[in-house]
Length: 431
Ligand code: ADP
Ligand code: MG
Image (cartoon, rainbow, N blue to C red):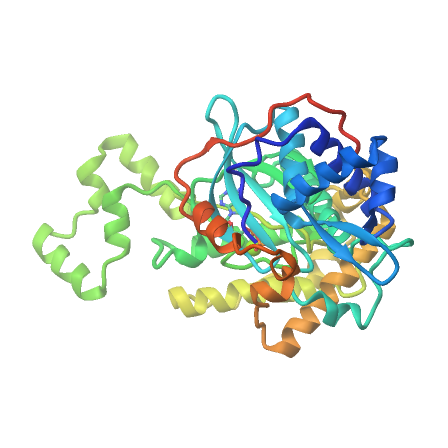
């Protein structure tokens, strides 16, 4: 599912009011009866039908004829549009640029504000994985019959934003959270590669300690990341080009260079005196590589029944990765029981997140969903659902514009103004 922002600017104020009405109706109906949309929008039905036609053409809603009534379903495109519009109205973002990531459960875009300052928009897409398989085991629909993908995706965004904010406020190295609406959040763009893409580091032991310290500090604050791995750690690299070249050398290349240069440290060529010493100190500490942690929807409290399991899994992920990638193995690693046994907590961040308005029942619903999804993944061998499986939008649309739109947005150049002008109609729903 691509975010096609190119012609979203052009939507009439009538259409916007009707789209907002469809969203409101979605809270209690997976398929919202046309009559209800008209009632919420407070418009004549002739006007509503015209607006619905316009919205369906832009694939912001999809017409569904079920046995009992004719209605419309808000599509992911429609939900994306509403969130983007809210961000634009709050002056958080002005343009949408390239997609930089597609996870199983999210899409990541670079966006920019009026000044061209770049940020990241994460769009949660829970339910992209075969939701039906999971739904068969448990009913995630809230009372009424709201669309489960909307509900779960929105919960994931609210939760991620709440955690990011609390972590950032307490000085953890995470992106700065900027805004959140519906299933989307805006955060600082980290100009760095995931650890996964880093082939060699000057001092694996130093980086390893830094990461284990982060896991411990989180746990001492009452939290476990739950997906602490090489994909969710972005590594800000403060090394010079010469240092990177040196770190990428094979042993043979290294020997050849030392023979050639008499073993001088390549940084000495670029820096002198105190500056050089400072550099070496940072290198020893491992602070030339600065990890930034991302991706928080699955975080759990250290009070969670399976906390020890999640904690050990995070630790194990890092150990396994360092052994495989950097041939670095250490017998020193944190143990859950010794980290949390004394009960001493620096902060109660799990309590702070709860106080941020992320409700208990929402927390439970999301945790259950995540756990079942993980179990489902394990069963299915981690296979990713095909587009058709999650996006029944394309199945229902009459014309074949999907591929063209997807291709256009995938190859879209740098951020271009793509958002609707603010203020043509009231916003019916916010978060
Ligand atoms: P998912 O839940 O799909 O794994 P992530 O939050 O881990 O989503 O983001 C997926 C990828 O997008 C990351 O591995 C990273 O490459 C990129 N990414 C996410 N957030 C940022 C950010 N704030 N700055 C830079 N890149 C990011
Ligand atoms: Mg991730």
